[in-house]
Amino acid sequence: MRKPIIAGNWKMHKTVNEAVDFARSIENKLPDPERIETVICAPFVDLPALVEWAKDKQVGIGAQNMHFEEQGAFTGEISPVMLKELGVQYVILGHSERRQYFNETCESVNLKAHAAHKHGLIPIICVGETFEEREEGQTKEVVRSQVIKALTNLTGEQVKQSVIAYEPVWAIGTGQTPTAEEANDVIAYIRQVVAEQFSPDVAEAIRIQYGGSVKPDNIAQFMQQTDIDGALVGGASLKPDAFIGLLEG
Ligand code: PEP
Image (cartoon, rainbow, N blue to C red; front, side, top):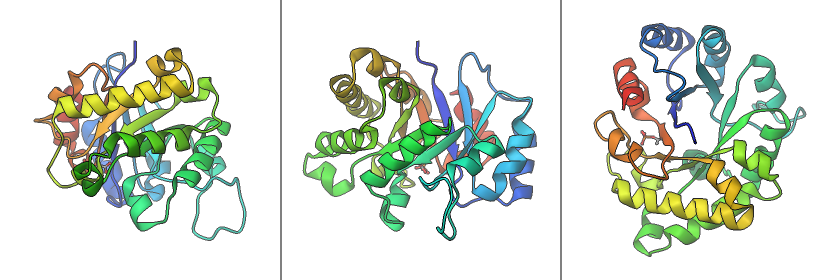
């Protein structure tokens, strides 16, 4: 069956020294890797030190974005080849903050998803509705469109190895969440969309996380849901004790 995946998204937090201190303080408390996949998605500059630390541990290290080209005149960007060479295994794509502040589009997320798979990186593809879209009853329509566009022309095998994070924009960093049942309902719908676009087999295999104000004291209710395969967590992943609390869920 699908193994749950808990991924911390540190956003623009932690210098290299802070990242290493964090890593050392959790290393003896990591969960059984047979039960939970643990991932830390850190700022680019932290990645070499974290990859080195994680070498003899069952923790995946991820980036929070990348360009879709392998190299070129794209000042300030990082390519999938660079991440792969470092030993990074995951990359968050289409986070709502990238969509909102950095002109990320469904089309660029799709290009990046192809690039990730080409270079053996696992994309964690973020989708989710805004507060206004939710109020207007458009949640499923919005996530349907984002999922279809993000996965366009990927193979079934590539989709099986991808991760989707359902992150309602209004729940990110706000302390507000949908109920676990509401999140599960949207995630089950995403699985249905994947089944239609690819196959039931692919839909059964892909892992779909919930993200948005997940904390140690509310994670269990999300994890108990049938279709929720873990969480993508921002704020609560920044403190070692809270991160361990999430993993103990
Ligand atoms: C996120 O950054 O993906 C996120 C879900 O943030 P938070 O947990 O702080 O809401």
